[in-house]
Image 1 (tube, helix red, strand yellow):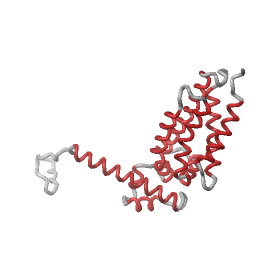
Image 2 (cartoon, helix red, strand yellow):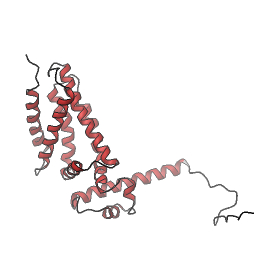
Image 3 (cartoon, helix red, strand yellow):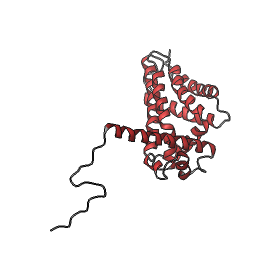
Image 4 (cartoon, one colour):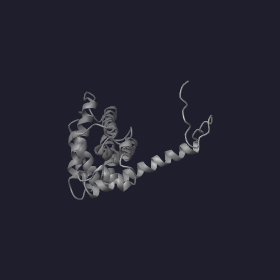
Length: 226
């Protein structure tokens, strides 16, 4: 005969443990969301106050009041955690940028109104924005980095869409490739926003004025011949 398996202390033979209730699942979900909120807040504070390079995952976990391994449940590593701190807000900014593009509006207004949303987001915490853009330049791995890149792709698509609207409205010659022009516009935005963030302080009005000058030069060469 096979050996008998000893019952766990306090357990009664034949009794199945109760399944988690909806309340139990809700409590676990709330706990997980609270940990995520504390980790993001701790990482944001330390990255800004100490600098990205001087901050380590142990400090972030300690400040958040979680176990050392818990941050790795949400991000692959420190770089991925940096992107985690901005992804939700940046994705929201991309949604609002899309809402700022109107079918009947001039292309200049559509582009500047869309990019202004991102400038305003970066302008609230320029130190964190500098770190994020710096790390993204050479690092594109990890689930949070992938989210960041998807938001970037949405902004590129929005620039392309704005150019396509302008072509339909007769502002830009139809023979131009909207995808190429949109990428040129987005590349100019990327350069402009990096130059703007290098300054102290990074005022949104200053950044938008410089971006407008870049956009005007691009659009001048694309106008439909009259």
